[in-house]
Amino acid sequence: MELYEHMGGAPAVRRLVEAFYPKVQAHPLLAPLFPEDIYPVMDKQELFLTQFFGGPPRYTMKHGHPMMRARHLAFPITAERADAWLACMKEALEETIADAELRKALWERLKNTAYFFINTESDEAEHTKSDGAD
Image (cartoon, rainbow, N blue to C red; front, side, top):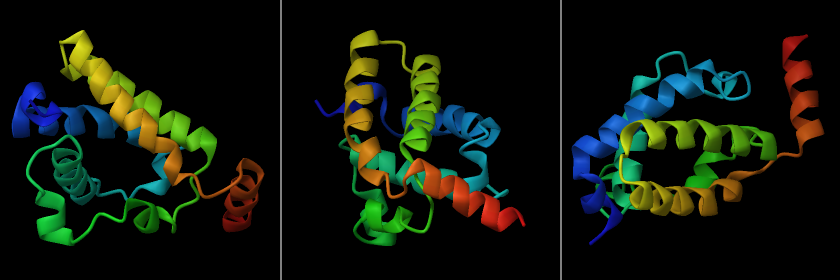
């Protein structure tokens, strides 16, 4: 059985996304990377996670091949931001997935890919951040 089915399908993915994004919006390292209107981002994440966890290829059907690293290149993603993203997701998983073994399997799947998005050294991100604030 795919992770998607085991976790409860579309309703479970939506609950996970809805638990995750308030944490992202409240996180000082992550919030600046996201638009104020988070709902379109949530919808895309729901489509992506559906596919990522073995459900229907909803993201690909609507947006084409995920190419997630390329889609994130415009954002300064540091190791610290990857860690923050994972911390928010871990909390959301703990809130929405009761089965500890399933939660661990989902976590491992996410953890193994999160660091793939790092595209900026920490000091470079700080420099970019301070340049934008001037």
